[in-house]
Structures are given as C-alpha cells and as structure tokens.
Length: 237
Image (cartoon, rainbow, N blue to C red):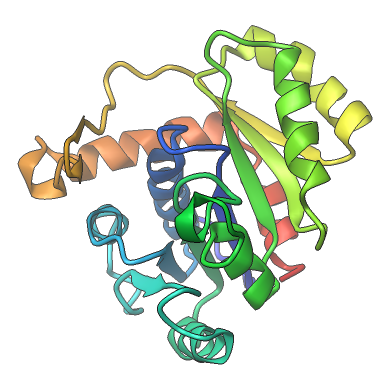
C-alpha cells in the first residue's frame, strides 16, 4: 500500500448513460483507497442507487458517505458549500456524473447537467467513452464533446469495453488529434457485472459478494488505467 498526500478532485463523466461511469467510478474509488488515500465520493443529481455502490467500496477512511450534488435543486453557492464541507479532510474527491456530460434540464439545457456541476466547482472532467464496436470513430466523439467544452474542463479520456490492442493504436491518436490525455482502458469483464432494471441499477445488497467484485474491478483498473495520471489531473481542481 502506498501513502501519498494529494488534495484534488475529479469528475467522471460520459457521452451517455450506460457508458460505464458507475463501474469505473467504483473501481477508481477502491483503487485510490487501496493506495491509502482518503476519498470523498459524490454523485451528480438526486440519484440514490449509485451512491450505494460508492459506499460499498469501503468506508474505513472515516469520511462522509457519498453525497449528492445538484445544480438544479440548489444554487451554485450552496453546492460549493456542501462540496467544501464534505471534502474537508479528503485527499481527493471523486464525482460521478449523471446521464451525458451536457444533459441538463429538459434534455436541452446545460443547467443542472454534469458539466454545469463541474464548471460550478472548477473540477476537471475525465470522459468515459464506450468503445465497443468502434475504433477511429471514437476520436470524432471525443472531439465533438471538446467542441462544447467552453471552460476547457475535459482533461482526459478512458475507453470502456476496449481491448488492449485497440487501445494501443488509439491512445497516441487521442493525444495527437484531441490534445487531451488517453488515461487507459477497461476491457470487457464478464466476471464483473452491475445489472440494470427499470428503476436503474440493481442494488448492491442484491448482488453476490459486491465487495469482492469491486476489489477485483479495482485490480483490473489499476493494471490498465493511469491512476497516477488521474491524480495529477485532480490536483488542477
């Protein structure tokens, strides 16, 4: 176990729901805690299921349980106040976004979106892009999202459901053609699965040995994702 002193924050976002935000966020929180860091998790919006998964990663660092942050239900000053209070004592705060990065009120406004929250807090964004069934076309997706990034918050990208071979070819192109960092990939993991249903994800206590699954996810993530790079980006918050 490593002991590193870090103060920062990062927002995990995606182009759309179902891209793997929750799985990656849980793996990242556990991987950071396994390094001896105190991690304060957050969820964008009023969602109550995803925070249960964040809390299942291990609460032994003595910080708050996952807190909700919502720029629609609360004004920016209130959101900042909640964030500052709950993040006190944390080495790093990890925010999981909601839906697509720019999806806000009514599906047409930026207000209330993950991006609105990240801009409110001045937190860098890492984009999780589902790579299944695509390769170079992913560059167009990333560049499209960068085009809407008026605050220049998107600092890196992680490819989900991507093979090592495809990632090896795309990583240098991502850096050269988009100007942001390729931070790694997660391959398809058939032995780790968070099921969905009509009201959202299956609850953690309905899953078999959720702690072991998250632990395995953290191990895989540590092998193929640049954790040090994420920590470096988080210090720019």
